[in-house]
Image (cartoon, rainbow over all chains, first blue to last red; front, side, top):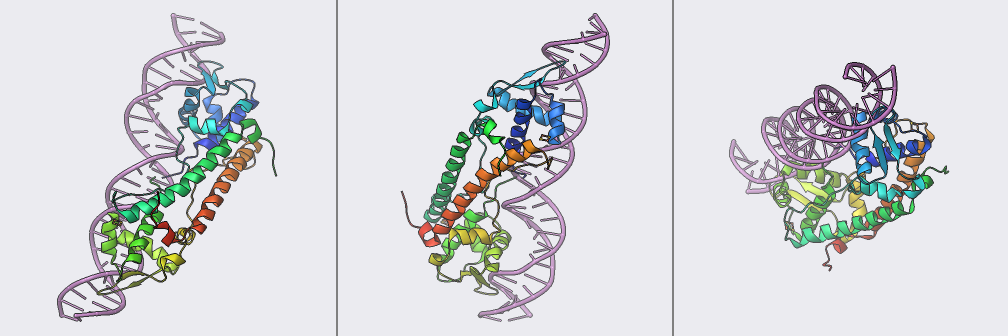
Length: 136
Length: 136
DNA sequence: AATAATGTAACATATAAAGTTACATAAGTA
DNA sequence: TACTTATGTAACTTTATATGTTACATTATT
Ligand code: FES
Ligand code: FES
């Protein structure tokens, strides 16, 4: 299966919304992401459910922010997308009670949890306006 | 797509090999993983390519370790499997030259790289015999 | 020669993300 | 009111990838 790229795409969209005076349509945003308007609606809809963006239907409608980018963190956006698994590996457990298997999985998940915690902590420190500042 | 579970499975297998006097066959190992012998051969073959296990064909053949579990780290095994991506999200780049997109992706990959580095560092600290010690 | 193992290619299945189509609904505009 | 331009959403298709399966060649022991 392909890896989830919604976070990267949604941030791109939010940045454009932050730079735009007027609402932007799903079609406009889809063109920027090289995809389909429905994909934009589906994904951005999750952010609307959490209150980060709003939509207006009909002529001159589209998507806009409900607050400045400085008031959104990467963590909030990630959570709005469903807090999807950040780790690319999985841990199988075919024999629930075996010692060996349990030890292996405990060690792995412990490392993975530490890494996830780190990522989420970093995400929490990064506001979206900061995200867009130039770096080197 | 399903997430890669080979690391977890291979560690389970290595633990059994470490506890066994004689070589173990792909069929035996497959039964432990609730899968097919060919899957075992395919995955374990990568570890053989890197020299951590060896195989003997014919009667009484099978898989065995080339060195004690205390001489293998989680990191080495992970690398032998192809150093597959540890992060579950991907970063898309449809417009290679746009500033916004580049900033977003730079920020994301920087956090992901930090997390990957952390995981790899931890992996490097954990030898397989340690992995199998009881914890609470 | 028979048996029991691995090696490997080719193909099938399962799963999830992303893409597409179709149509309903809402809001502005002529 | 009719037209146009938006979103909302369900249903379906495509694509990507891990895993599973089948078939058969090869190797080593008995
Ligand atoms: S089958 Fe139980 S620990 Fe491996
Ligand atoms: S930065 Fe969005 S299309 Fe270029």
